[in-house]
Length: 163
Image 1 (cartoon, rainbow, N blue to C red):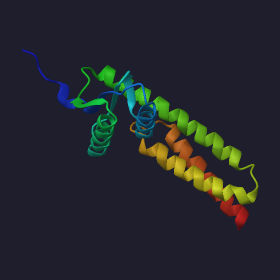
Image 2 (image 1 turned 60 degrees about the vertical axis):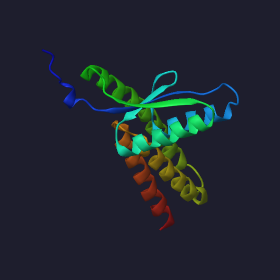
Image 3 (image 1 turned 90 degrees about the vertical axis):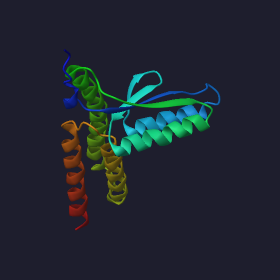
Image 4 (image 1 turned 180 degrees about the horizontal axis):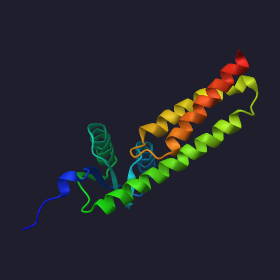
């Protein structure tokens, strides 16, 4: 008898899609949207996100856009067969986000050297970027807190200079 230990496994929403080569605009738009969502590229034309109502809805919208662009799209709900595979996929997604957070920390350090007038605009831009990264951060790496501290520190620095 085979027991089902999958109840402890996370569920994933998968989008399998194919778009025509030409025109390239829809393919580029899909790629950008997948990046903005933080989707894991499993294979060419197969992406995944942890299952929640937001991610499922985003993939449903994207699938509709793909079909409207003369492509094919199918949504799946699934789970990995082993905890090791699940950890590996989560680690890959966290590593991709971690590099974005590290770049944000470097940018915060660079902004300190700007002229006082441009620091405020740069801080606002950096806060928006942090929100965008967090929106696609499904498995927060330690760099998430480092980035938050860097932005908070920069905000305190900018306020200190103004006061």
